[in-house]
Length: 60
Image (tube, rainbow, N blue to C red; front, side):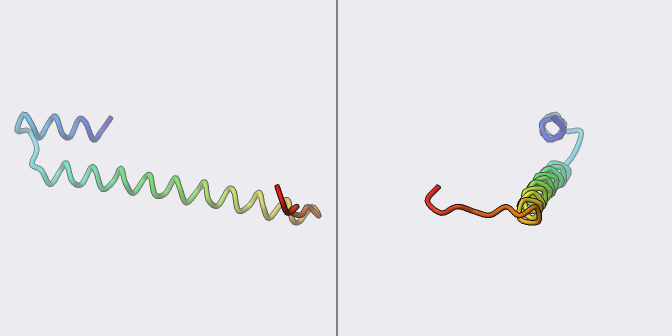
């Protein structure tokens, strides 16, 4: 993956450590964005369920 490539480039001296940190920050940002998208998808499914007259049963 891109982070591993950046680490390898750092180890052989092609890039500085800041480049590795920037790649790591981009990776974490992408993961956060994915979590937000999945959360929004789940919220929309709940909204659709409720809009179609569904409810929630207790004890399940």
